[in-house]
Amino acid sequence: MDWEAIGAIGEIIGAIAVVATLAYLAKQQKQANRVANANFQMGILNRASLNQDVTLSSEKAAEFLVEMRKTPYEQLNELQMVQLEAYAYRKMNLYASVQASHDQGLIPELMIKIYVADLENELSRYPALTTVLFDLLKSYPGILEWQVYKPLSESDDA
Image (cartoon, rainbow, N blue to C red):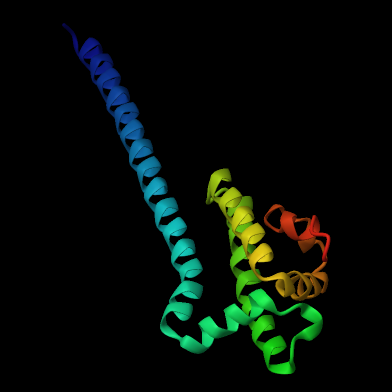
């Protein structure tokens, strides 16, 4: 075997090593992306659980939510309106971050469907929330067309 043949074999081995290294790095990157997406989704779920944490830890917050189940929008007093607006802003920010994350491919379609169902549930439990949330969202152009707000745009009360 001459030096040319040995050199050609060395180049082939080198090329195989480069391809193997690239395949390994691609696999590692894919795994890192899955971990990052899982962590991102957990962050959204943790943010969503803040409302439950507040309700569980504060009797006043729980009483407010009970009142919102019974009180029509037209009968809200000023304090209830301020509280409901704050609650609506919190929900609006959560849903907006879910929609933005979905649009960027960071969360799957299933997760946005879960939040659409969550909004449907919120609107059915707290009827006055429909009016307040709709009024808040009207001031942000185009936001009512977002997938996550579909239940609100289909609501008869809005």
